Image (cartoon, rainbow, N blue to C red; front, top):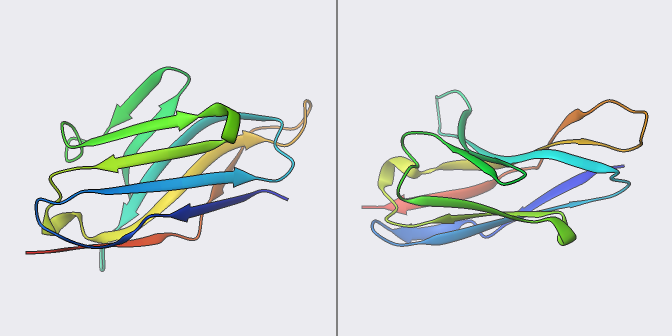
Length: 120
């Protein structure tokens, strides 16, 4: 069974920084893409950033302020968030596209989410 466990959320003032972590555990054979998404109250879940191999992808709202990185040895992905704004307030979800065996397909997995609140 695969689990994605996030940590690092919390309350921060505007202009501050937070670092989110997400560790994938279980019977993991291979990880393709890992990423972060967020969902604010009353809004749809949206992409924040993804990382696959050496390639990264960011939402326009995250470019220049957030940095995604990955430790393959630890099956962990990080999101460094700087210059936070009140509009960054949301539940942040870790996502992983991975397979549990050589012959199994890649599947989508989600963490339980971690709350990030930015006060003005």
